[in-house]
Length: 156
Image (spheres, rainbow, N blue to C red):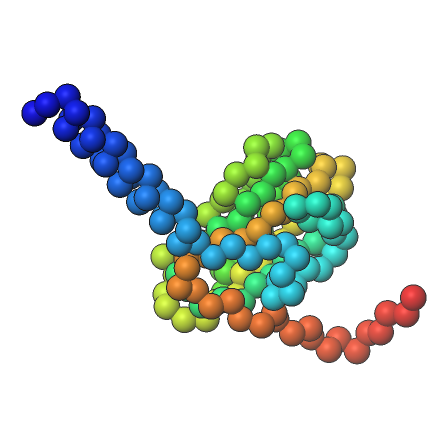
């Protein structure tokens, strides 16, 4: 094979993998922290490209169809813990100080699911930045969960 043909083959091969990687990255549905389909509860500040979760009891909740969900998080000091509650089943997440994508649930059955990301630790352990949820491209994000009528009324 000539040098020109080998070089062209390498470029074509590299281009194929670039397109493959790009198409896989595009196959994610990103739901921003500002999306109205995400219910946020507790002390949360909205800053630039992220929301900042401060106190224990702060939570984010989303309803969706699909088999997996991920979240992009960065903890201030790596001292916070979260309950990841999917359809009533709980696992614990301990994010670190690097902004990264965490798999919150995978291998779920087809159908509707509810996910709640619930901060367990106090403000003294630092805050956590939440950037987005990510889902497979074929997922449907459903309306946010409703609020329970507890009979309490808050007046400001």
